[in-house]
Length: 392
Image: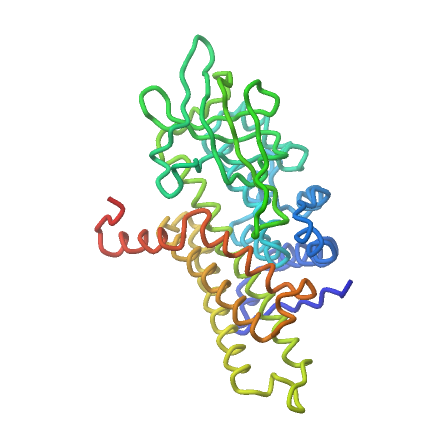
């Protein structure tokens, strides 16, 4: 097992924009990834197994609900801290970051933001420690980019509701203790609710044969006349703004996270180019290799500046959904292009598990689609700048 030699690129000295607390949080996550994730992640991906033993470690580095207030078990940190943790986790693997993103932004965030005080106290402390894990049910077999067309539904019967429907492409679902689910009520209004494992008629079949996010656990959520207590319905939100608010938080984390994958690919390519000898000298000395590396570090630096500024705006509650969409699309597309160029620098070795390149590349093919596809985010930006809705 080769040692994790990762050195983070910081071409524009962005560390000077971070507080000492930011750097301490980031470095703690970075060292944890080097110690716990890097040694086992290639084997986990090859076997298509989620390394569940990492859950407690993720909780220990504050990856579960870092911005949730301390009184509910969260870290009480700011949004830049959250972004830095996601960056370091995705440097390790997109699947590991996905697990933390779902727990934080798609489960804990809606419970805290839309839930009752009783729901917050019941669920958040256990989610923060990893004692309970959650998942998020929005995407359906026939409704992905158009979540408003969902058919999953709840109907009131006496003092409870009855839930029917199905969700798919759900990270964490095979082992989740709870699911935050979005369904239409009898008036066609989207409502959020918490479904608990063990409720009769609730199953979570696992999705197999993935070529991407192989170290992440993916599955479905199936609801067959599941009885939902009225107290499990979110009281403080109605409509599509509920799930979209969650997605904004998740997309923000991805904008930071994907840069971590890009940094890892660049770092590996730079190191390999200095070690690989061809025609009597390191390939780092050839113009086309330098072109690739120079373009990589340029794009990483641009993305770093974008997400840092976005983090500042988010801390000030001024970041718009369209700004978050732009950053998510840019970071993931940048990372995917860097992974492909890094693979070329590694030559044939780039497709092996000895280097992280192909794993990152395959993972990023999922990241560029989930939480809003590349094209959908382009249209969000287009609508924002023109005022014209191209979705309908």
